[in-house]
Amino acid sequence: MIQAENFIFYQIYPKSFCDSNGDGIGDLAGIQSKIGYLKDLGINAIWLTPCYESPNVDNGYDVANYRKISEEVGGNAAFEKLLHALHENGIKLIVDLVANHTSDQHAWFLEAKKSKDNPYRNYYIWRETPPNDWQSLFGGSAWEYDERTKEYYLHSYAVEQPDLNWENPAVRQEIQNIVDYWIKKGVDGFRCDVLDQISKDLHDPNGNGNGPMLHPYIRELFGRNATENIFTVGECWAATADNVKLFCDKDRKELTTVFTFQHLCLSKNKFTTKKPSLKDLCKKMASWQQVTQEAGVYNTSFLENHDQPRSVSRFGNDTSYRYESATLLGGLTLLQRGIPFLFQGQEIGITNSRHDALEAFNDVETLNYFKTNDNLPEAERFANINAVGRDNARRPIPWTAKTEKSWIAPYARSEEINVEKDLRAEKPVFAFYRDLITLRKTNKAISHGTFTLLNLTDEYYAFQREYGEEKITVLCAFERGARIENAYGGAAILNNYSDYAPQELKPYQLIVLK
Ligand code: GLC
Ligand code: CA
Image (cartoon, rainbow, N blue to C red; front, side):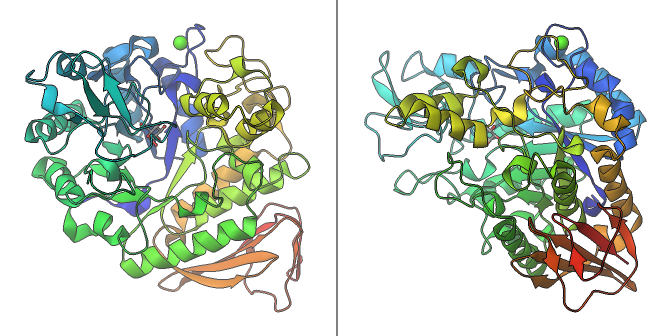
């Protein structure tokens, strides 16, 4: 059985992590060269975003061959080497399983397109007329007309990402075979892309998510003997307080855990410069702590991934309080209940990056937004994509002040914020993250304990974690600092300021009391 509570994940976006041969594209050998850095940080598991053969319309989430690692990152040989090296260093590796859709360049789709009676036709979802008016999550209709056979196919994402038809048992068998292929290679598990979309009710006008066969399909795939010791995390935008238990209740044999998104969906429209408040964030997180605890399940704890802007820019202050807010957000990620997932660069407090030319952007969602909203002034669209666009997470990690060459415009603040500089700083963000990880590894109250909300005011968030005799109290001050009338007891074992006045917290101050 998997001890989910012990994992501390670090997500790597390979093309932007570390480039070992200077061609401008991060690669697997680059990751291998940074194992020492990752061990130093203290993480014990990695989620590798997809780097299979792909035309890269959606940066690898359009897979053309599920069994081939792309040559630009080093191919299958480099993957096996990396996996071996990670295991030798006690680090687990989970890979991305993108099974809701393929690339339109996948052999199955190239076949399926040929004729209505092609044996692969039914691998995808074709209709003479669209049965609903679902919208693609990247904008426009989710149905694309194909001239050759005069039918529409479903694509929940880009036109070049046709959705697979999971009702076809042959498709489910193919996916199972892919899972087994990577298990045989030695991977430790899977992060399952938009998993809650695999079963569809085409008559549901509200769209795509939580379809009627979702749970039976998950169980069929992961409830097998072959997958018993495999870590699985589903990306489940449709997970709610009412159904989260269905995904990751141990007895149901579906998933180890889920990514839920309520805490990151704090505004109606995605593309806005309006910042959510730290208080709203903490409120959502606290309520999900309670929901999952009551449901007896373990979810994940994260603020960043390759689809999200940088947390310090979104929830903190990325200029005058960058250190304090980055470390506070690290505390929120690593001290609450749930399996923590850090995203590359978060550990040195990387911020969003400002760019004012469209060539600096690569993400299909961002570019679609920019093109289809030409009713808005250009300056406003740039402000929006700089604030929340996915490329913020996808710019190469600035190991030094200058990134020589890269497939996407490099991080704009790398002179000021880079790994080399952070590690040499008087107060490295990295060191604080390392301390948080050590704390989590050495205190069962944090890794395994219960969660109790102590207080959530306009000024601060306080919670307690408890395991047996062990009790940890965490205080998180918001942007203006906090006055606390009845000070909390215990000795401060971690503090992102050099001093601590129990009744007067400074802006973004994080205090751990034991
Ligand atoms: C998930 C991925 C995202 C991708 C989408 C379609 O949300 O995290 O990057 O664009 O699925 O595969
Ligand atoms: Ca390279």
